[in-house]
Image (cartoon, rainbow, N blue to C red):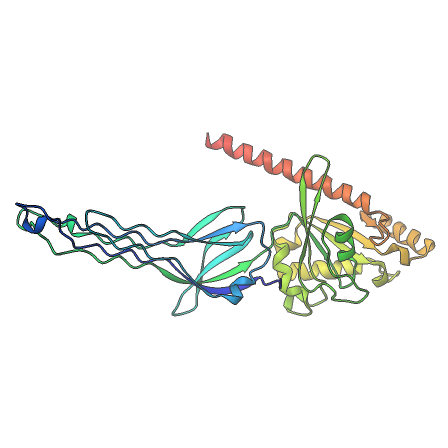
Length: 352
């Protein structure tokens, strides 16, 4: 299925059912007495986060969604049946913006960051009252009932920002896809040319205790990505929610005179795009060391040591150095989990 991370749709809730005008057939009662029931409530339009989805593709195919209306009230004091709510599942990480019909301005109304999180975007209309509610001492046989109340309609824009623990960044053909294919069940397209990855890929890895870490492989970035150059700029938003980054540089792109300049290039692009993104914790990796001679590899490691730069050296293709990198990733992941748990515990104690 094609990866789509933005869509505009129109959504609406159901109209309430009309109240009923009806009368019983009873002696000594004007027209038998009123017996018209209320109309049923219209269905709500609800959006729900789902981890089973990764794209907004379906919402490019169908752009209008409307819940059903409530049933009409009936005689013999029977109320109309309320309509079922219409629930639309969206990928976790989808932001929902209401679009003003006049000036196209937008307002964020929800952010589906958790599995199963629901938000009522359009509330269904209430059912109209039947004539049983309008009987009075001066009107024993009312022929009055209410129409059902209309539902709501909104234009909304959906924007998906993938939720992952780790974001893989690098220049085109750095070997990110090979790396994620080696450590997870993800099967990205892999080829020996730049821009093989055209959309983000997600991989999930699990440790011996059952902890899961989600990794997002972002299409290769180039200089000027923050201003729209290349392909990766479209997907920078998908690393905004990652907890830390793994920055991969290919040995084939290195200059032995200034071997780590590729890291600085993309760091600057991140800074231009978003200071918070640039400030995220990074693990730096040089991949494809199988392309280097032993002398050149030793020289690179010495330069990294002299610069006091903790850089991992690996060949994802041959799985050389992968375990050391994974060990660091799990250590950072566990530490961040513990820090978040401690912070949540502190907040809970303060509120108590």
